[in-house]
Image (cartoon, rainbow, N blue to C red; front, side, top):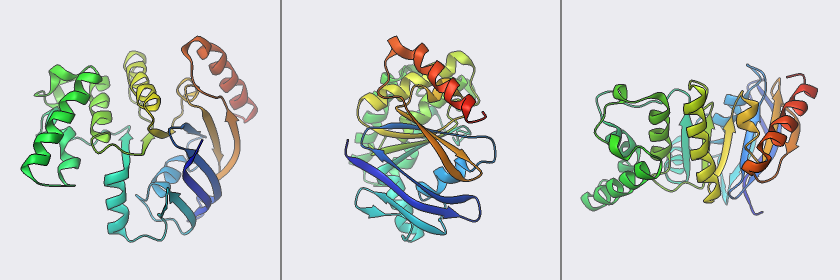
Length: 246
């Protein structure tokens, strides 16, 4: 598997301590650890949303840590997607316009807007929310809203998707719907780096990284997900996390 993301000796204000790992093209990787262990800080520094103190983060041929804030913002817009537990959508816009909002900042031409509108509607259909385009965010369920966030994250065809507890605020049914959406994205070749507290969620990933006190303590290799082996994968993940003191 060709390497897409490479993190080397990443440090951040006594929170992250020389963390090193990589993510391959199209790979789905979970990050786990207790509250306060540095998981979200890792995600923000790897994606360039925050500026690390030292170390290197390479996305393909671009080194992120030394970039200016404007260059990091442009890289996030054009090559990364983001899905958070707090969904950060605007209450005065309908679902379709919320999905379109970030991508129209990339280019403001009328032709591009029309093209992106068609793409947004296609993504909404694909993830089962095609009939909700005119709804306000207060008029849909949590699972539907999170699937809209996934649509928004895919509008500019990112190489990698960063997700921070994307199922954390959802019930079991909505969580499963969102997980299936992530698996579909993964199968189509987009890399995913996901922070989660849920071992069931992590067990659907190819690897799990365990962070404790800002250090990468261990890694579990699970391989490509298959529904037929989901029970065995969840058991393996649970046993491994138990050994980690989870």
